[in-house]
Image 1: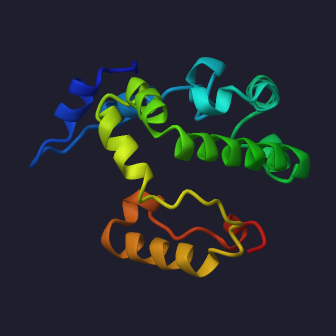
Image 2: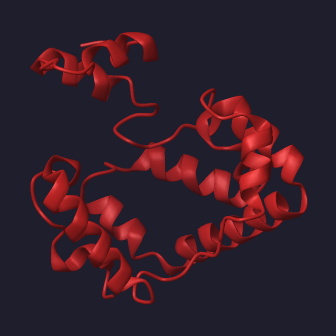
Amino acid sequence: MTAQTKTVLKSYFETGDRPTEQQFADLIDSIPGDAGVLSESEIPATIARDTEVTAAVSAHAAASDPHGDRAYAAAQDAALIARFRDAYAGATAWCQSQRAACGAEVAAVESRLSAEAVADSLGAAPLDAVPAAQARDELLFLFERLFKRHPQLLGGKLPDAGFLAGA
């Protein structure tokens, strides 16, 4: 099982193909980071400007099993969540005020997007973060629709009651 290029991965999922177990393993191994945890070098530059958030992500990645009890504890850490919310608010404010520069940064890490397209979309995209409780109905609606059309996108089941963290 090894990481593959985007071209190789795309070839596994062409119309009519039936990817093998090994090909799915290659896809998973090609996801950046260790088990879904981003390294410092993979944190988008607009968020990485916040040294406190960068330090928190690094500490979490170094000290936790991202799918175990420590990840749950991190999700319950109000101070950590507040730092991420503040970093997100700062990053989105910067992107809204510096659309061209933000577009260039996004395009630098996501080759399928052009800087101009990202910059243009920022004028129309609502980037406000809301608590899950506030978006609960919309999230459930989305999950139900996704599940009806492509249950595999949700692991073959709808998220459990705890997924929305008290929403």
